Image (cartoon, rainbow, N blue to C red; front, side):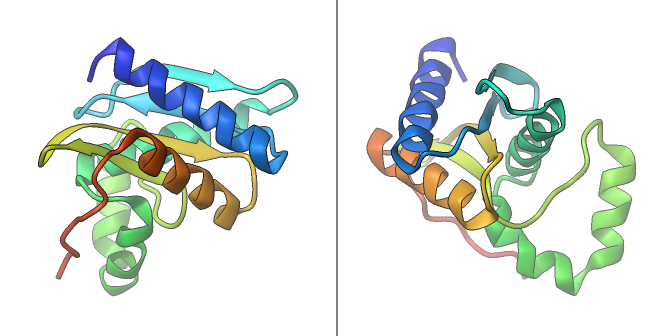
Length: 141
């Protein structure tokens, strides 16, 4: 993950959140889940920024979008709890966490939070589409 890509992702998140009229927080992390860049819109609370960070972290370390992890988490809730206890951020499933993937290579991840879950997901999906990132990931068994 580099700053140029992180800036593109954050910029696209700002654009997409403005399009739907929802202020959000967006966080970009590297493959280890370390924050590369974060942005919180005016009026967005710190807790929302923490949620976006957790979504990004989860997508990075699990190498899957958090929405894809939701079904897996229902099948193995104990595993999710153990992973969360070992992680610097809570492991989160559901909408809003996205992997940044180009040419089959994982680059990092980003998280969006602050709107309804479906809106967080729509913002991130639009960012992936706008910037041409890949969205194909194998499901967990």
